[in-house]
Length: 86
Image 1 (cartoon, rainbow, N blue to C red):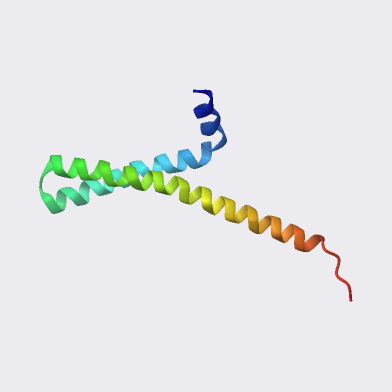
Image 2: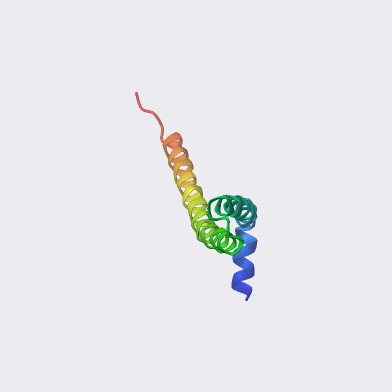
């Protein structure tokens, strides 16, 4: 359990952002699915399944972007610390 807490603490901002995205996505998906199907149970099932998969994908998408930004930042620092010889 401590590993889960450590991960949650370390990725708190991304998890909070993912959670808010999830709630909005479920609401929109439920409305759209109900408008298309006219069936409450089908719309609730669809609106919970698809956004759940999307939320997990979004979390890893954000982590990949953070890693890419860190890499770019490290390259910029490395390049700026190299003396220019003319």
